[in-house]
Length: 445
Image (cartoon, helix red, strand yellow):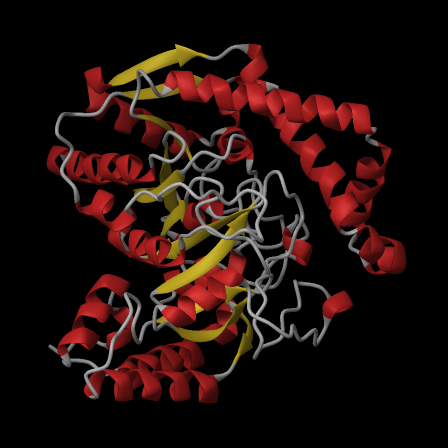
């Protein structure tokens, strides 16, 4: 039976294109047909340009047939969260305030995508200014449920096989949580691995770029293509980046040591998510250390909120001043809180953030990774928000690499992800541990 090209993982598709067994045009046509068949019930796309995508794909095929150099993503269609600037497509940031906004240059990560040979399919739906106000995107597994946010469309597009890869952003839980709800792999690398230049700035201290794919190797492949130093990004670093795909393919030399924190907000887990996580921990047995968490660790949730709310009010002050009445009620309340945070309170919060980073640095001397839920359970009902990000907050605050693995299924037959968190700039080691976890759990079932 012939496999429809849109169902291929990114790794499978790039190999098929490189070998000549599949053309980029045929892959893009297959993805566009899948979008036409399913997106009316999902609403993953804020902007789609089929003509441009096919033209890009045809150029990829011409280059390959001519024997010219090709990049690691050659001919692969990719979706971009609609907070990432593109010179040939509007970037509307999930709000009518920026309706028809057309940037005059690409974000640095888009430049890297083009250099890697990717086909930019279009822009995926985001929540309002990548914050809390939900949009019209629905979960491909059940349209009566949310896909999560704020990278709603990116997660939904990959889960629905509209594209094999998509890019999102995370300031709290906006990659890991939607990946969990939509049953995809989600990877947020160490803060600074991927440039944020040309990406909507909501919090310079917290904003990070992440990836969605249908396999662990897929998200590693995309991250490798995007990674690199950029002096235009304040958190970018010149040190060598970890080799993500090598990590995702590597065998762990020994069984890793994992830690589970008993945090007070773990009582927010739904019964099925709690049961599923406990079953995973039982299988891991002696590889798991259960550790009581100090109150100061749980208090980091409030620290993240203080930094986020203060900084978005600074970065987007002109937008909020000119368009306050056009903001959602949720965002109006956040802006009102953020404007009341003093500079001294903000400075104190940054100091606590630095202390948290030091704590985790010391923790990972002893452990390979932290294991945690991605979210409180299955995706919430559509119209009731995009889900609680609290199981992502601590790690995002510290800039740690995180990966969501679609390993569990809840009572409503919806996906539930398991999260692994690793040490700063050891993303390859985290992906190696994630591969080990997948294989270990598969062998145990």
